[in-house]
Length: 407
Ligand SMILES: [Zn+2]
Image 1 (cartoon, rainbow, N blue to C red):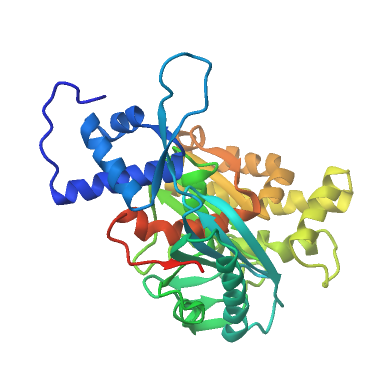
Image 2: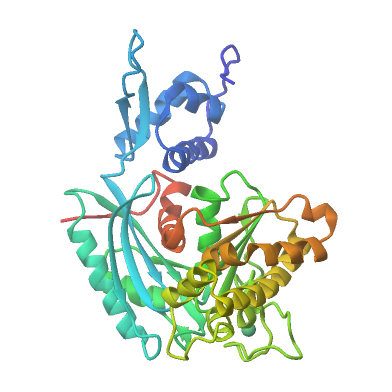
C-alpha cells in the first residue's frame, strides 16, 4: 500500500539504511521493478522511493530504464534494474572433483564461468588456491571495462569456521584447519576478504533465494556429491548451529549396526548409505567408476530397465527415504530439495523415498512437505557462493568497503 495520505516521518539513519538495503535486495533478487511497485513493497511514499533510487543510482548500483513498449499509449514507465554490467562478485565452488569460478553480476547474472578439474586426492591448499586465483584473475580481466568487484564468495565441500573461512574439516581433500579463505584472498589481491561457506548451506540459501524454495520459509536442502551435505532454512534463516557446523544431515546415523563405513570414521551415516560409492557398489559398478557421470549413468540405466541399476536405486532410495523422513519429522519443512547428484538419484528413486515418508513421517508433517529437485542445477552451490559475496553490499549498500575496479 502506498502511504498516500499519511505524512511519513523522516527516516532515521538506521531506517534509511534498511530501506536502501531492502530496495537493492529486492532489485537484486527480484529483477526489474517499477517505482510504484517498489514504494508499495517497501511501504514508503513516492518521494522517499525516488530519493532511495537516486542514491543507489548515484552509487552505480541501479539504473532506471524505460519498460519495453506494451502497445498502450501514454508515457512509458521506468523500471529500476540492477547495474549487472557495472557491479560483480567473484564466486568459487570447490567441489570434490572440480574447481569452478564465475563472475556474477548484480542481479545474479553469470557473465563468465571457468572450470578446472582437480585430482580427488592429494590436492593441497597451495594447489587449490593457485588454480582458483588464476581463474579469478582471468575472470577479472574479462569483466566489462570499469565493472567493480564488490565481493568474493566461495563454496567448500567441508566444515567452515564462520568469519575467517578456515576449513576446519574437509574429509574429501583430507584438509584439517587450513586457512583457505585468507590464503585465497591474499593470492587474488583484490583488497577484499574471501567469504567461505559450506556447500550445502550455500545451496540451501541459493535455492531459497533463487530456486526451488523461493517463498518457502522452512526448507531442507540435501546436496549429493561424493557424500551428502545438508542445509536447513528455518523461518527464512539458515540454521548454522552454535559454531556454524550444523545441518550435517549426511552424518545422521541411520544404520549403526550393519552400516557402511563413512569418511567421518563412523558407520551407517546417511551419506555412507546413499552417497556416490553406496549407489555404485549396489549397482555392481567397478571401483574405478566414480564421479557425477557414473552416478547419473546408473540412474539413466535404471530408466532404461537395467535390473541391477533399478535394484540399486530401490536400495539407496529406501535409505534416502529414511533420512528424509527423519528430517521431516524434526523440522516440519514446507519443501525438501534434492540437489547435486541427489537430484538425479531422487528422480530415479522417488517412489521408494515416498514409501518411507508415507510409512514413517507423522501425518501432521507429512501432508505439508513437498519434495522438489534443485532448480539451479549444477550451479546451486556456485550461485550460493555468489550470494555470499554480495551479502556485505546488500546489507549496507553505501557503506561497503571500497571495491576493486577491473582494469
Ligand atoms: Zn559420517
